[in-house]
Image (cartoon, rainbow, N blue to C red; front, side):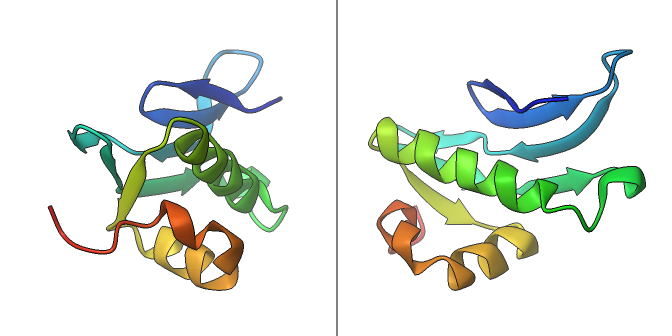
Length: 94
């Protein structure tokens, strides 16, 4: 399994194409998304999958010059632990 990126999500699917891990970040307005949900299947928990996905989201947002609101509790915690991505966080609500 490997990370896949679409417009507003990063995810992993198993061999049957079942989503086993996902971070969603729908657009709020031009240049701003909301990281609103992180899911990791029980079989993958504790392996750093959520952190890998969040890093991929942060790098994708940086590459596209976008900012993120953090309404997902995991995203809030992850960004606190990774200040090197502080430039991706939106400084204010939309």
